[in-house]
Image (cartoon, rainbow, N blue to C red; front, side):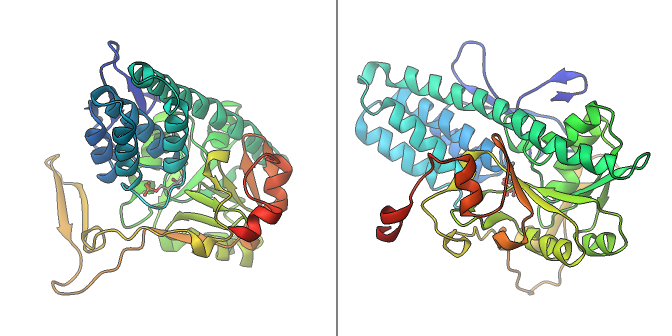
Length: 371
Ligand code: MRU
């Protein structure tokens, strides 16, 4: 997607192939800066420090991180160590494990002198495929927006989204936002309610930045406003992304997603989840087995933003001494999800729906019982 007229992906190799660059998402929306990752340690630090975030982009960054590790040491031990170190950076998004396993599997049986090169190629393929996958998610989700527009001719289609599941969370296009970009580009009158998404404000800072850069009409709302907007008929549908979908269709996504799904169900608002198949964890039977990341208290006790002089500051919003809790994700039960928008089409949110589109996917039958 474009930033100030220039097309970007969120991660790209530098021309001489010695490193990858990423957009520093901790600086957005007030500053657009890039960071160079030259080692597996840099990649791990970028993921842990939220320089890059969003399930598909975490996976893509880790894939390049593993390739960078193999340049220093291509032994089996180094491969397993770097795989483990990168996997430990964040616990919830399964795309991280998916991408790391894919790179490790691609090089495991290769000669040591070609491993780094093969891993680099695989990481690049993961990125290219992610772009195409998200574009397809966009095409399938576009149909929902086109139908919603047809149901209210001449009026704006209002979509609510949570966190950031746009191109900044992926390599390009995004998942939940891809249908919105396609609809906007096709001339459909679409407007997005952007949940601010406390505590880190990925909605207010990243989704609003993305949509604004592309000219998509949007309004940032406090997280608590969504239920009211649904009750007063100002939301036509909700679309979010996800960090991991369990085999039964339960959805892990940014904290607060569950409350939006509850409000949507109570108000008859369709609630869709957009995902690439790399986000399905066939090994996890249901959402209660998905690890939920606990993050630091200061993300809750403090908030950062731009001061009138242009400098960025962090200010405290709670009384000193108050404890804070910061679970970063929650589980939305499959029964609250109207459907999954995937690269192969839209399906029911449940194991049968997932298997109808991805019959080759993971554990089932006897395997399932043993797992
Ligand atoms: O903590 P984050 O910013 O990595 O959380 C991101 C989300 O929750 C996204 O909604 C999710 O990764 C889907 S990305 C297409």
